[in-house]
Image 1 (tube, rainbow, N blue to C red):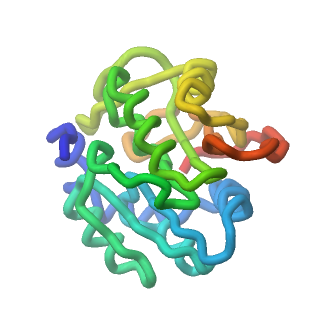
Image 2: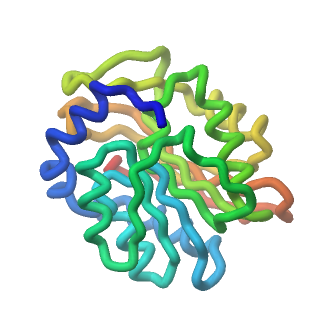
Length: 214
């Protein structure tokens, strides 16, 4: 498992603050759409789960949820969510094939270097069952750098993300775009997407909307 040490330290130090933000109401429509793509009792991976708030919400809706994070403090909080199996793991640890109906990656893959991003998408595509669904939320922009908390970020534009997803075999649809203030207190642009994995029929048409970022 490889992860940026300063990013992990920042999340570990602020795990309680992050959990205290709660499940953002503006993100619930995205969760509804993601869950609506999955079968009953779906097996879901929350990849970069943070304190496990979304994982807990999915488990409460009947999903079988695995929650992975590279921060021990976040994993401990995710493990306290009823029905959630939490594991200390990073993006590079995803080696499963056809194991999940859905993968939820909410503002987590933006901490991976740009050069590693295509390989992470290929791992997710392989880990999804045929017709599986990826939820992806990312801050958008250009280049790489650190925020005021020391967290490493790799930015991509919306068109870049769509191109990367298509090259990995996904069929992406925009859910939301906008700007909002995150843990570091800066106003940042973002997009959220649903992406159907390989070997699926015609993707569901999704209406674009705008909302605040979690």
